Amino acid sequence: MAEKYPDDFIGLAYHVSDIMEASNVTEPQSVPGYPAAYLDRSGSYIDPYFGSGENEMGIEQDWLDRCAQLTPAAIEVTADMTEDGQYINATSRTAFVLSDTEGFTIAYALLADGLSGTGSQWEQVNYYSGYSSTLDIDTWDIFFNGGSSVAVEFNDVVIIAPDSRGVAGSVPEKSTLGEWNEHEYSFTVADATSLYYGTSLVQDVQKLRVVAMLINADGEITNAAQCKVTVPPSAVGNISDSIEEPVEVARYSIDGRLLTEPERGVNIVKMSDGTAHKEIVK
Image (cartoon, rainbow, N blue to C red):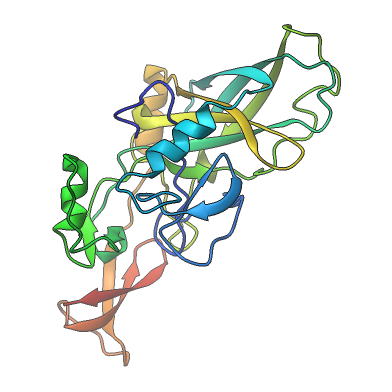
């Protein structure tokens, strides 16, 4: 979808129970199982491939139907990282066709593209293994032809988004028709950490984006905008110096024996940052 509609499609990937589940993200909705998708946080969740029906890539038509609906406002967003690399300052602008804008808010999310790593914690669980398609979509081949999990690069990963219902006071209760309203929001880069591993989810500052979402009183997204984070040269060095990827320092069997090498079955891996995780060795 992002490749086919690069100027219009905005995807937000919320990860749960893996290394990319972020400690400073509030999920806007819960689902009974995965994979699942919401369009504009409206209605019920749907399959991210078939959509609300049974046709291949049916989600595309569902998304186009949502795009055809009128929006109460235009929205823009810009974002800049500070020289020291510690903060990302975003500015959103909204212009309404309504004068009564009470109940609207703006929610912000910081996204990372190109996330990857080694080990089973970076593999994507694959529910589409064994599927076949009549569509010519190369990006799905790795899933259709892969096993129960596949190694991929992860895009659109939400790494900071604490206010899923929007920031109070981000939209005035009354607006002048066609007049732009500005709101500023700041992300602390150090807050982008993995919930279970404590590691930074900022792997490349050049692959960060900010999404600003206009939320109505029902919690639905009525319009949204995204932008790439502008990064000054000095910030690249500061971020690179501050990010130290943890390394494995010890490995144990499930019954507590110290291992000198990976052993088939469940291994407990202790990292240099003090965290530990289970790894299934096949």
